[in-house]
Image 1 (tube, rainbow, N blue to C red):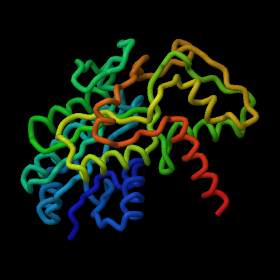
Image 2: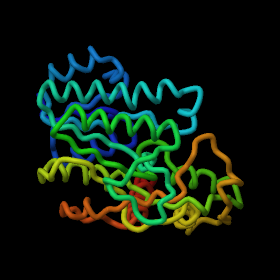
Image 3: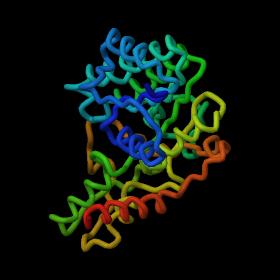
Length: 285
């Protein structure tokens, strides 16, 4: 029996977290949706009562933002709201500390400055609304919790913007990327390190925001990803690249509270460089 339970074990963050804990020789129990259906209240309660974890890293989420607007709207709410409610109630039952990963999409993206943790939320798409509902459930259910909002996630495991750009660059001479949406990219390694840092240092409970430092547009991010590739990257407006779900135009979240915990946050450029080196080493092996 271990002290740590991870949901969403095979997702981008869940996989990175497992890898990090493996490196540290820390034991854990981890489940994907097949091993633990978080939307099933009875199953969740039974499993958590059986394992009696002291910490639950709730990494499971429905993250297909555009699909959440229509054909998978119900799945989005079922996983991100109902699933989180089930996990939170089970955590309360056994007295476990809950770490819930949320999103910058809880904001509307019209703030020209940086969003702080206690700024008013105003999600404009179904994904953001469901994740905010999850935040509220965690706050209402538990006293001992960390809510960690993040944005523009990329990492070794699963689909993300970096892999998409690298794949497209193989078959195209020219790529167009929006240049009027600004935010902070987040390497899953940085995020995994931070959420374990909160737990290990017994940081004050509450809501935090964590991305890599500095900010950029998607276009600037793409340019850096493809800096060594023989492909032209051209800027376009959001109007020229319509998507089903609303995307915040300026969702730069303040990192001051995260930095105050003593965790040193790499810039997104440093994180991207380390990530690219990591996947290149993996291809050579």
